Image (spheres, rainbow, N blue to C red):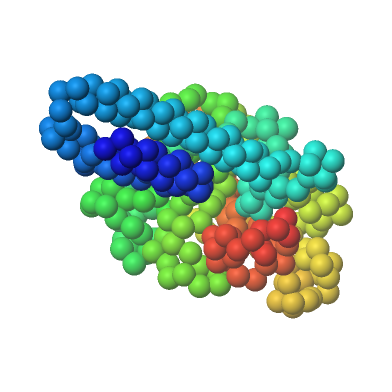
Amino acid sequence: MKEQLESLRKRAEEELKGTMDRQGLEGLRIKYLGKRGELTAILKQMRSLSEQERPVVGQFANELRALLERELADRAAELHEAETALRLKREEIDVTMPGKRHALGHRHPLSLELNEIKEIFVGMGFDIVSGPEVEYDYYNFEALNIPKDHPARDTQDTFYITDKILLRTQTSPVQVRTMEKQKPPIRMISPGRVYRSDAVDATHSPLFHQIEGLVVDRGITFANLKGTLETLIRHMYGEDSVVRFRPHHFPFTEPSAEVDVQCFSCHGEGCRLCKGEGWIEILGCGMVHPKVLSNCGIDPEEYSGFAFGMGLERLVMRKYSIDDLRLFYENDVRFLNQF
């Protein structure tokens, strides 16, 4: 039996030297020292030994077990050290090598233009006010003097949640809410997302952005409106920008006007950008309708005001000669990297 144990020791030590990973090492431990291992199998034969031989063989077996356990532990330490050295070599960093430049994000073209417009109006003493995108029919239409039979209130143009609640189609409701809560003087713009029931194409989207402004105070005239918008346009398109006002109609302003800027590409001669007209429509505006002031608890006999609204996407498209609205929302880095 001692010969069997000695043979087991030699075989175990040879296999230990050839083991190159922890998985193999664990397999050897189970093979020789496990409950069903070879050492246990030999020790089960001790019942056939005499009483004098059993202590001698038992001591030899215990010494062999302790030896194999030490050698297993030593080999495990060697393997761990070798694995650590290999990992350190793989992860070695040459600090003298030039670093890799990481691509940094930047502002979206819509955000760039919006921030510029905000700075212009803040410089003129305007506040920036926001409001809910899920709005009541009253604030979106009724308080703005838009009658119930007006085409803008049709379900073909508006996303209704209930008969009285909808996704706002303009940011004008923020103006109404502001006039209800704040007494004149009021100077504010309300940029934000708006929703219209439009099919997606190169010039239409069910979601887009508007920037609407409002000024209410004593003695406000159309001249104040004209001066404010001319200041805005000259900051945006240059001091030599030429502006014209055309009569128009909006239910919430009277009188109303459309504002055009002379094409900054052809300077009025006609080109592809302005479709040969020499002028580019920028926004709509007008003097706040007295009924709108009354609806908000402001006396139209004492106060007057002007309002205007512009589409952010339209401004950016014209500024950068972009011909497809969908480019703003597709997150194509080939497009975005140009800004």
